[in-house]
Image 1 (cartoon, rainbow, N blue to C red):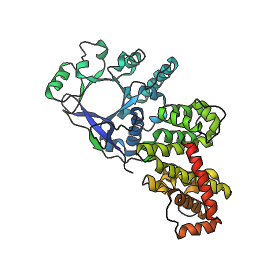
Image 2 (spheres, rainbow, N blue to C red):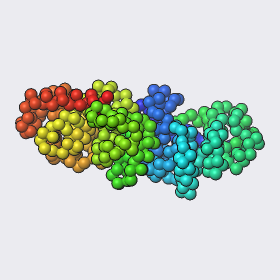
Image 3 (tube, rainbow, N blue to C red):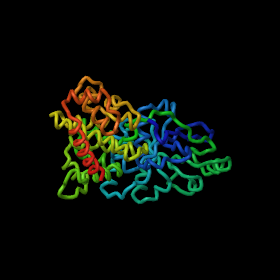
Image 4 (cartoon, rainbow, N blue to C red):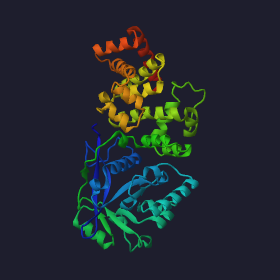
Length: 409
């Protein structure tokens, strides 16, 4: 699966130019000096964390620490950070992406205290510490203050005396000298090294981290508050889920306006199913798959569901199996790998590898119909095995097309 971005690292050095830590971030494949425009900044941190955890600190940064840019409001979602090694991680806290209540700032204070006790260190941007709610937190928890040289001078700001200062965007000897003159402790910029690629394998989990975390929380029977908070940490997912629930597919008499209402209406089982649908949509958007191709993938899922209903087979198993059976055509990812990575039902895997011939035929027929593939000998054999007529399948396909359009409204 070719990703439109890659993981990069940039050295942060001491005054003797020894590498102390690496800042880890994403870069666009098309423009390696730029952040990938298709990734919202708040989501980039989730992807980076997933890649660091799956690839390992040693491959990413050797024996050095890593610094990750992370929105301050997400420190309350510990599930994002539990895979990191606290003693080797500096969280460079960024401004919140939504307005926060006084109670939320109290939760953030508690979360920072807990993370600090676990061994995490924190960096605060010098502009952020003027924020009335952030400055008290920076005084208590900041290990590092990050800024361009012109905004950073320990002599002129007593607040900085007990903090390590990281001077950024240093591009020449003169700026390096100026930063040392201002008593900066650490230094970052093209003068010491440009961002270099870190060859971490991108996975579906890395591209859809919030959804994967939410599914994992559902699997371990987490309480509804944790599930709700995970979803709310991703504004894009909130928008998609509410739009999805309010689509004409569900025929709701009232508009669902909150995640709490959506959870109450969908229930946990349906939430899991439709989160996986949204995951495919999110992958398609990130990888710039044309919407018509994504529709075919969803069409295969709905056709599978309708065939299963007719054959008195579990509809949810058929829906998800039909959805991911076509992943080789859309994402160039083996369907069996997705079943294992996402911990989907073992019945789906049996259907993929033909240990369950009935499910396999449902998936195969749905794939052929949705993608208008050649109706070969295997297709004809599956029709016979399931005792299905071509005329009926065309009717089911048309009904499924209508359902897909409702789902995407």
